[in-house]
Length: 126
Image (tube, rainbow, N blue to C red; front, side, top):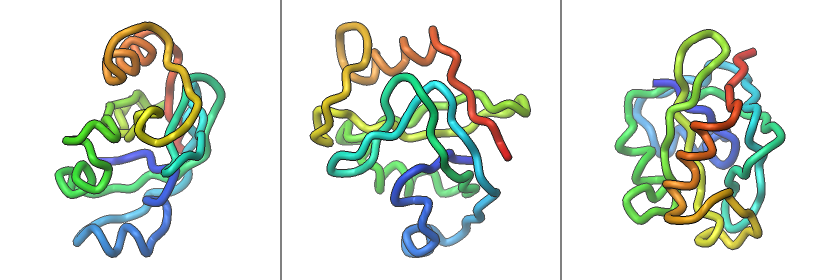
């Protein structure tokens, strides 16, 4: 599985500490979302974000690291410009201490899903 990473997981030392098997597959650009820094980096609607592709089969380990079960981050599949999909973690601004507003009402994960469904968000692989 390829994951678009834009924060602590871009560092080889972090990936090495967490994962038994991984590989960085190069640079990528995420269009339609931009990076915002809080307690940890997250993404917000609009703009673009530079990052890397991390390839690993250890999804459960990444989910634990990103706090998916506690709602700190959600993992979503995003389209890539080569026709594939790339996973991406998006952090809840309320839990990360950033002033980001996702459009709409309801739970954070639902607002993310609605934005992704109605916006032109794509990962460009370099």
